[in-house]
Length: 86
Image 1: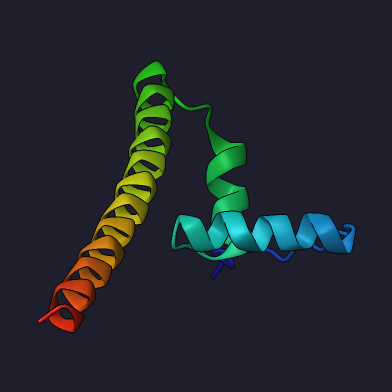
Image 2: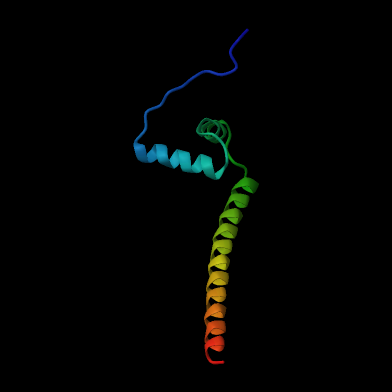
C-alpha cells in the first residue's frame, strides 16, 4: 500500500513562519493545508474578487463596530449627565 502523504520540511525565517500561521488561522486550516491549496492551483477571477470583497467587508464591519461602540459610549455619557442633573 502506498502512503497517501509525504513529508516535506522547509526552513523559513521566524517572521515568515508567523505569517504562514496567521494566514492559516484566518482560513481556519493547518499550515500544511494552506501551502497545499495555495501551491496546487491558482485562484480564479471570481475567487480573487470574493477575497477582495471579503476584505472590504471585514474592514467595513470593523469600522461599524467601532462606530457603534463610540455611539454607545456617548449615550452612556448623556444618560449619566441627565441622571446627575435630576
